Image 1 (tube, rainbow, N blue to C red):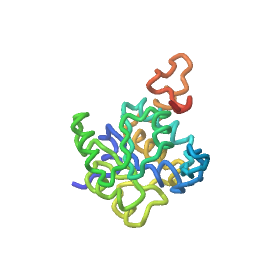
Image 2: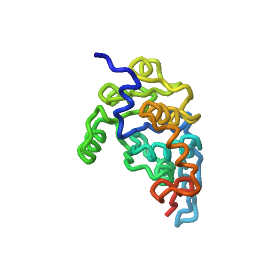
Image 3: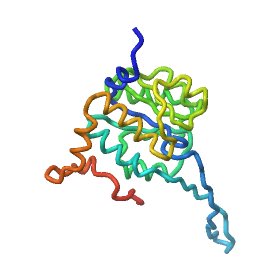
Amino acid sequence: MTLSAQDRARRIKIILFDVDGVWTDGTIWLFPFPIPEPDGTTKPKMIEVKGYCAHDGAGMTLARLGGMKLGIITKRISETVALRARDLKIEFVYQGEAFKMRPVREIMEKEGVTLEEIAYVGDDVIDLAVMRKCGFAVATANARAQVKAEAHYVTPNKGGEGAARDAIEFILEAKGVLQQCIEASIDESNPLPPSMDIGKGGDLK
């Protein structure tokens, strides 16, 4: 029997994301920054800057209220990604991963979950290795055609414009808890625990 996207989404316990093109629009800004040398000269260092969507960040809180854990797996290594992940209190952070099933297997062993209980959100062909095996494969609206063709669900919004939030809300809706999670997130009488209270800025230390 072929499972629907909703059937697949109901089983999800962990949502994993690519970063560039999923959390962002894929643009990578590189700025030269002069570093003083002992001899009085300067050496240029490249500073990487990315833009993130606040709607996605709020979605991470909703996902946790729905009982799920979150992670990122990206090939690039970037301090701005590390800062954003700390700001959002992401449980699983893997950078510098060219072969993304390796960290997926590590997460499965650590958390005691199956592939059917993992969702992955991607946009480019490097993500296909996980998308072909996980329980719920999501492609962003800006994903390559090859990626969309193998996804169980394609988000209405592009990466960096709410795609991660789309994936989270689809899963929560399939589980029948989306509205419940929204109400819990704005309930003044029941403040969020520190583990879910995001948006206070990344730790720069």
